Length: 229
Image 1 (cartoon, rainbow, N blue to C red):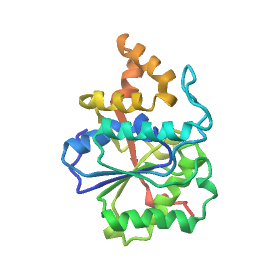
Image 2: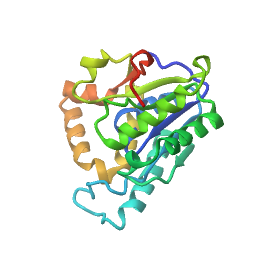
Image 3: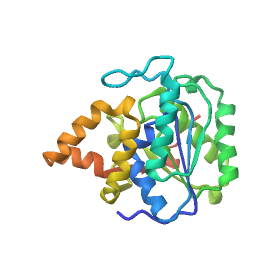
């Protein structure tokens, strides 16, 4: 499936590396299309469990390391507008709905995106993922239907396809393999273990690994079954 040309893309995720796993090839494709991409990363992932493999970070050094990794990942993808929003990792679910909705609404008002990429609330497992997706939905829902940007969501819970159906968009991003692997390598404190698996799988032409790396999946948000409060 070909990625459409957009006026402006806004990507909103809570953690450094959220973008690398599932959407970095799509981001690189939009940038290659000449579309401005803004990435709003809500936290620095300072509570991440991984400290490198072998460990090279500490609890004290991890926030600065992950900030540097995020900057390197943005460079690998070609992102020029990276926003670090300053929230604290593993606390987004405890922020007020009003604060989180305003944060997203302010970005929408400034950028007027034609497409927003985020997590699908209810189908993205981690509490920070869920809270981020809910905030985006609330902010978009406040707009008149005719003024709403497209909302493409990442979902990976075990029941996502059973309840949401098949993804609406599956993009072959193999032309942007280097950008995706570059983004993954940039987040090395979190991805070292997975990169070994991926690199081995690519050497062996493992179909599951190839599918995971080169095909990025998105669901259009289903407003007709909207349950977000």
